[in-house]
Image (tube, rainbow, N blue to C red; front, side, top):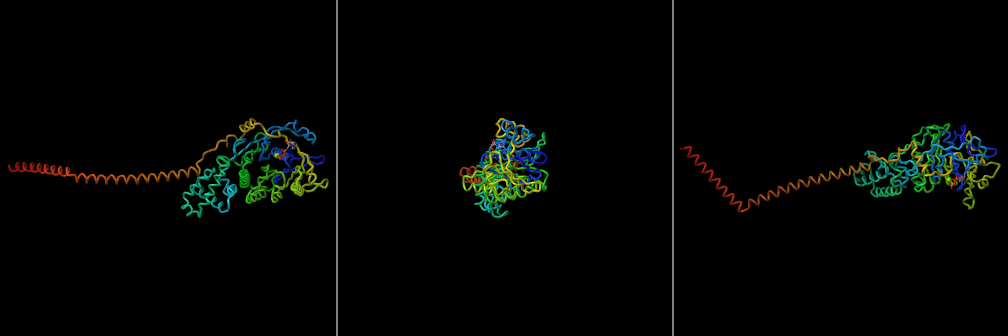
Length: 495
Ligand SMILES: Nc1ncnc2c1ncn2[C@@H]1O[C@H](COP(=O)(O)OP(=O)(O)OP(=O)(O)O)[C@@H](O)[C@H]1O
Ligand SMILES: [Mg+2]
């Protein structure tokens, strides 16, 4: 719950645990076993940011954050409100827009192959260095030829086109090994099969749409990315997240330590960003986490155990919320020890034991204070959310989507002239030129054959005895007639 520059996250009899809004860009971590309250905590934080006029982007893995659009009710959390003595607590819904790369549970989110960039795409395709450099040349050729790479079809067409004119391109751009081009074609086709015609294309999602305030309330708008289907393609999820973060990093000016964040991201199931990802992707995430803070962007990672997050990222997360962890196996005990080591100890309790004793909706929290120092860990009850917990009906979702200020901007995929059409046109033109040349050649050959045939026929006619006789008779008749005319002329002259 937000009030006067502070986000109240949890309370106990003697302590109120707040994240100062001015330090919210120092990033955070919410961890805990299944069902211990991570998603509700995320929700409480996102609501508070919205109320503070800070837009947030929330990854919704199970669809259970959608209820944020509806007011909560005392039936579900009234007792928690009362026990925490929250006198100014109000039940309210928040301004939400739903986004979904598949366009089923929200406005379609698309990026283009071009703006994702060859580096991120190479990561999605898990390419080697040599393959990545060929991919970079494909992008370069497309740019030089003013061919837009919007969707995967454009990239596929570019690869086919380059393969067909490989000799010319190799002369100009250096080696484009045929087997590398074939591998790229195969990989791109596989990705296309996985994603269908979603994710890549136009119109591209405007990053600025993530940073909007609600016109009516002045609250920060919450963009809820419905990731239920997207999570089946973890590389696409990671690519989308990195595209958002890269684009924000490029677009936002350096702000140092702002009074409040420009935007906050919540990544539920954050382990997906790090597990099974190539090292280059992980290094990229680490770099972004370090740098984006100064652009006024706060990142909050949600996962089961801090051990899911690489140490280089953990070191950057200032605000920690640790829900209960269970210690049935040695590996789990180790994870608890690691989680406890990440919290500044409180002499009042044993951190490792406290982590195991927490009830649902309780947590050990350690936030940075106004000087940027971590407070000692406190055992608190997390506030209840002000909005409805859990999912909403399909009907309500459809209603929100239709009434959203983004409605109509992205729903229909556009069909801009891009590489695919231009390559097809070039191939068609080539085909036409070839056809015209072949027709011209044929016409010349026909003419020649006709002339030859005529000459042969003439010869044959001349060689014919009837023709010869006829010609003789005609010649004689003509001679006779001329002689006759001449004779009568002479006669008349000398009369
Ligand atoms: N702060 C809270 N206020 C009220 N109820 C809560 C709170 N935290 C947790 N709960 C209750 O506990 C349930 C489980 O919480 P939540 O869904 O946040 O767990 P989770 O850790 O995200 O689980 P999972 O790992 O399965 O996603 C909630 O549906 C809610 O009923
Ligand atoms: Mg959850």
